[in-house]
Image 1 (cartoon, helix red, strand yellow):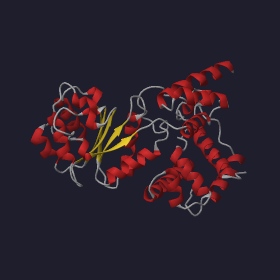
Image 2: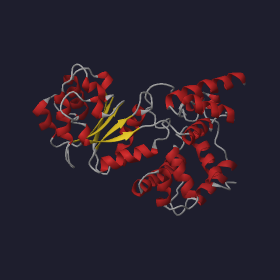
Image 3: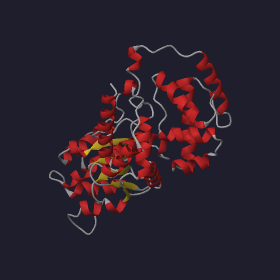
Image 4: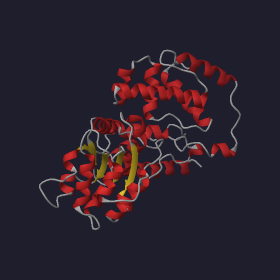
Length: 347
């Protein structure tokens, strides 16, 4: 029987995995546990560090997911009983074993046959099922955006800025109070300002243009422009005019552009080529990205290992904490190697 919230959550994730559906992410899991326990949305919002309004919206999305993926009709007031009824039916009439084709469609967050869950070990995470943590930073970013500010995400190299930036890109459709067309550009792929303008025009769907023509073409648009590795705007092929232009387009509550930028150092330090301050610094609220603390590291390891049959010892975890220093990429690589070691030794 489903005697507690954790048992119910594990059951739901197991069935989702068996059906080839994405298991619940960390925010959905917190929502599930809180609703099962009868907590109010405002109390759950405090746990997941999101606004009450957004928590309610995510609650509705969770109900829709359970309905669409599992056929369970639940609501805030009637949550436990439909799931318990589904549990009784499912365990008395288990689904047939999936074919090989269906198994390959299972999301990586539920790796079959002890496939290493600590992937990807490098690069930007673009699968939300693999993105972990940073709830506080995401809440802060959207609070700034919803109060008409642009945002600069600042942190050292390989701290997870690109993955966070992409998560903002993916979640903006749900978390922005006023809808905007979102455009994501990795500036490492753009080497001169003409290509910069061309890429924006192409993604927005306006005629290729620069300068005043670009401004005119944006007049009736509302765009969230998300730039990774924005330091490239300070390199050869770009002039300060581009940054001044972006500032002009992003100023004001109803500006056609709102910016989310990622850089390794503050905009004041990064763009210090002229005048007293960077034109972008004055309109961007800074959000600092720091290494994970011990609690986050432990939660990351537990969540990734949950669908597998392998466990790390307390000594392992302590060593991972010390060696990684809380840097997500380094931690993932270390966990990948340790998991591989245990997996090979069990063959």
